[in-house]
Amino acid sequence: MFSSEQAMAAGAPPLLSGRVSRDLRQRVEALPAQEQYIRGLQMFAEFFSPPNGTKNLWDLVSVIRGEEEGLNPQVYRKGIMHMKHLTSYKASEAQELEVVRMSKFGAGVGAQSREDRLRQAALIHVKLGNLQRYCELMVEVGEWEKALAVAPGVSMEYWKSLARRWAKQQVLEDNREAAPFCVAVGDVQGVVDFYTSRGELQDAMLVAQAAQEGGIKVGQATEYNNAAYNGVAEDGEDSWPLLHKTSRRLADWYFQDGQPMKAACCHLAVEDYRLAMSKLIRGNELELAISLGTTIGKTPRLTYLATELLAQRCTRINRWDLAVEMLQRLPNSEAALARFCISCSGGSAEINDLHAKAGFPDMEECYSKAQALQEEGGQEMDSVKYYLLSTCPEQGLELGLKVVKERMTTAGWTVQDVAELVQYMGCTRTDKLDSPKCTSLRSELLTISAYVGALLAVRRGYSAIVPALFQQTSMLVDKENSNWPFSKDQVEEELTAWKAEQVLSNERELKKDSSETSEVGLREGYQKALQRLLRKAGQEELDIEPGADHCTGSHLPSHSDVHVSFLSKTRIQIFQTFLHFNTLS
View 1 (cartoon, one colour):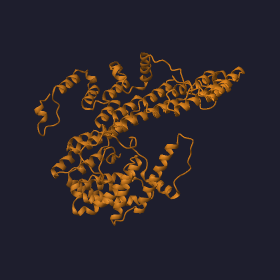
View 2 (cartoon, rainbow, N blue to C red):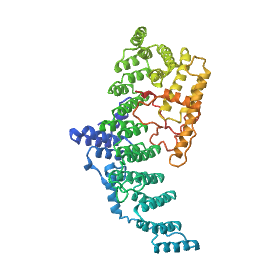
View 3 (spheres, helix red, strand yellow):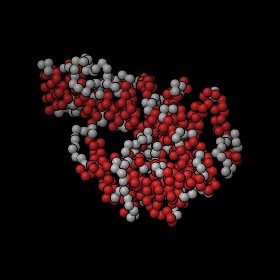
């Protein structure tokens, strides 16, 4: 161990010191050799990560790896539990609390002359044996409990129909009494939606898991038949999709509330590793994402993505050597290494040293190699890359912009055809771009990058920044007199079509659960523009889920420092959207 003086010395590498660090080291060294790596990851993750959710996450990892003997039930049951524990733990909790089943459904309204007459009529119907009419009259006076108690005397089909009617009314009134009857008639979707509408997402997830395990029989959507006496088929419908949908709703709620680790726990509880990793990456919990991905071993591409993003973070604190070392551990990392070397600012000796560590020639040799590749023809990508790595990156910009424009003029081009080249050029050092001889090239690069960025934002669901990027493109196209592969009118038409589609999409989302239907669609001109836009945007190749990102604590008030958005020219309130532009694969 090191002293605090050694750890705090100027220029010293990151060191651990102090009593807690010493205890951490002793705990790791005390572990059996075969457990030191995995358990060490857990201990270091708990040491460095915020306390909210970290313990819960590693408890879930222990369950998945079959190491449940170390769990503390009193702590574990208060967090996000694994799906196989949901029902057993909740059943135990119910026994402890000795909850009495509710059996009282309301006594109706005050005695009124009309209601008194209806009750008398109902009693006459009972004496005549007309139980169904009795039930309907009791429903009319609001005495549902009497109607439901007598309804089985008519038929089980009628009882289920009456129970559904009552449950639907209670849902509209936001009454908890709806849940037992939804369960009784096998309307799992209805009770899940009911709890979801109340924001009780953990209860919704519990019901979905109980249905998946067979604890709740899922009723048929059709009318009563003779397949089974109680109206439920012997083999209920598969509730697995409903369980995953519910867990995803709960995860999204935590994520939008600035709790990405809790969101990841929700996905781990149903063993959805891809979405768990996505939540951690989108929440900027990169170290934890790498640790989880390494431990689980089910999502290598997302683990590589998290590693590349963490390496990018290292460059912001001038740890270029560490960034290169991290990237070299990844397969097929030459493109990422090239981008990092292109963006490195410093003296020639420092840059050449970084090239050597990354496996590239020095800057002079890169220039010679770029010239040779350009003369051979057919290798524009590599030629641009080596020009940008050389002492004359402006030649790489000139050649790269020419190639990008040519590809954008071909029929059927997509953003994937030009994204890698634009990535390379976008990493060009700022001091080079700011030189007077690069003024025109810089303007062209900004215009192309804004348009490609808008297409990527459309593809990845970053709706908040799509208009700003399109508007930036339109302004730059109008300002510069270059020969662009797209016009200002085309950019504005695509933006208008995209906005119109967003409005219609929101309307469809609001109406999807109602009986109201809408035949309104985009007009023909907008449809063509939208189809052209979506074709160029293409399909996302990354495994990460789409949508805006939310870091830990992003729901809290913004920092006192004032940051102004480059796109909107307004103050940034919360950092929550990341384009991941430099992480295309």
